[in-house]
Image (cartoon, rainbow, N blue to C red; front, side):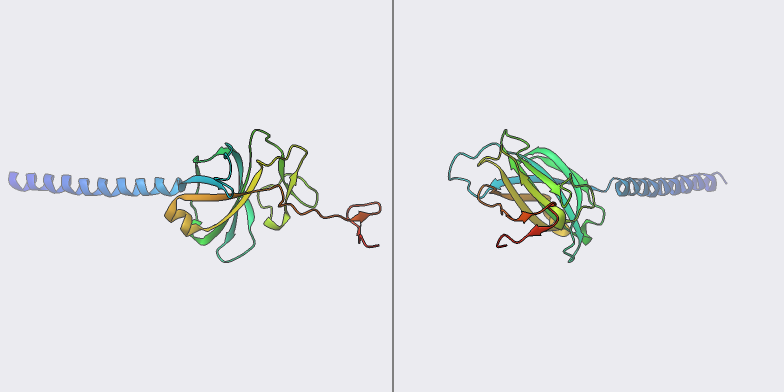
Length: 194
């Protein structure tokens, strides 16, 4: 009888060990689902690198997202005053089902010389602003060391590489100047030929 009781104790202890192992794994998995993030390394380079001393650039990053295969990107997040090589943490929830567009706006010490605005009211963009509404505006402090760049990546590419690489182009000489006449309101332009 004592032998049966000791075997019973060993079976109960073994069963408890198995149950506690399974519950620990479930708790860890549940915690992982709550903290579903991915760390991304951000690397930037200018398209004129090597032609002269490259300035130390700070950049703002605008992250847009769209369902995979859908060109309707909307603003997801804005991150300011970043530097090359920094790592950021973003949500990985449903990342594999989405495409991403990263807008880099960079400059040297003359920060604030480029503004990203939402047209037509020309206000700061907010989460959900569509890509088509985004307008870049330069002020009198615009220099040769002001850059922009757009990088498109699938969610799967982001998850597999853990890196976003932005190639920045100099803004000077890239902007389009739209000249028109108005009478009374900027919302009612008149053809320049008239």
